[in-house]
Image (cartoon, rainbow, N blue to C red):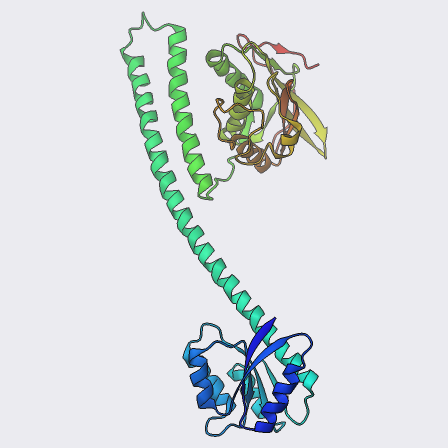
Length: 402
């Protein structure tokens, strides 16, 4: 490796001694350019790049420290490493030299050739590291600025997208409500009334999900709104909805009779979790296969937990994908491209469960199916006790837990 060093010293003997010491450096090859005054040095530096300078303090006219100060005014793209040489051991000169930008200071009568070489190599390395750190800082600043700009663009696009998505939902809701009013009572069958109700509720729910999506992408996740609720009642309602809209899949709801499945939870958050798990069970299993939803109660860690398990008989999850199943944008390698999905549903579901202090786990075998289990602490203020289990929904019998 070869480095160019500018030697500025008005003493011929000193220039020769320094040049000889550098020529004998076993670890570095130095290309020495010798000058005798500061003015010539400034002129040379303004037109040529050097890696280092050996600078005599006592120069005719302009001394070495003044030269260093003027060096900063040249606006060099790469400022060289500097070691100041002097014939005296004046500490004031040393301080001035270091403040002006020198990396080291040597007294001519004291230093040895080896000490000179070590000092110059250390100065070059110090400048190199400083320059590299500065370049990294600038790159980081540019990357941060680009990231902020990208986030601003993303937020604007998400805002526009969510606004455009809400338009059709509002039209769906209004038309469903108009149909409810315009259809004669004699023609309004219970099944039709139910389906119109599903459309209205689904549109409202989709609007809430769009708002939630926008909040999450902006880092404005809403805190949980915990209220006493019955998880069994929610599950039963979702089973009823899916039976009406996914009639190709029989649903089985299993819950031990007389058990309490109430807790202090955020109903909207758990509804999103339930919709995701049950929707996936339908989406990733063939028509005619059974989807089983189980509720149970578990004692542990000084409190009670309510467990919700959703089991399908679908394609299952490959072993290699299991560690990443709850990561955003990750989809199993065995999922057909024809099956729609963004890969964010399970990540969002786990986040909602964890905000409740619970866990979401998966047990799956490829080709046999999957079971997703939600474990929720009941929360403060809920006293467990036997309650009346609602009557089974059509097509979804309540069976004793096995």
